[in-house]
Length: 283
Image 1 (cartoon, rainbow, N blue to C red):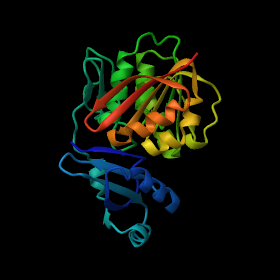
Image 2 (tube, helix red, strand yellow):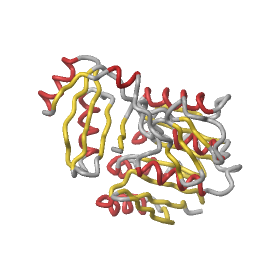
Image 3 (cartoon, rainbow, N blue to C red):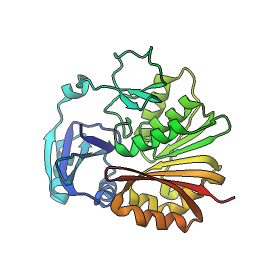
């Protein structure tokens, strides 16, 4: 199954083009400068390039992107969104199951379960960058005194997994207002009362209102490097920072950026071409 990442998928027209692996940050900045359209990235095992798509309300806006950046335009089939193909749950070992279809049984599983629908925002749990973080959350120990911050929350799946495992103080941010709304809706799908403090914020302009015992950041490597002072500034003394969304070819650059923040590398996880780094803040 292809792995997708992006903002909220919405609009009647789709602009698409193939880009080189490792050019994601450059193209995200181009789309933001163009008008901040919702977008998605899709990787496929049989291709060395990545499919970039932007979703727009009008054909004229989509055609304007082709004039500026090349690529192709196609109309979206609304029926595909209304009646999506059923997909099996995403399982993180025997520690967590993420159900994507509302009609699938939501009770009876011997492990914790979340309902995160497809087609809303990045982070349904299938992508390797998200799975590594979910696996680490599932292995985490005592949650009672752990304050969690999820940067670039997307669908909210990481913040909601932390809540499911027992965290009682959780904040989550995303620069896309639609993603924040989606994450809040996903919390309502899974819990009878709200707990997570959802906030719209750009991580590169983030001002830490508090410090957290555990900070999660599943972002592109370029953003992680550029925002290293802001991200590291959210970690409490002795707290941990878990970074994902890092290609192996970008690992050294990210490590150098966070060593400059006086963080100590604790552990590295690898899944295919993706890397997750666990850091600890010095006391």
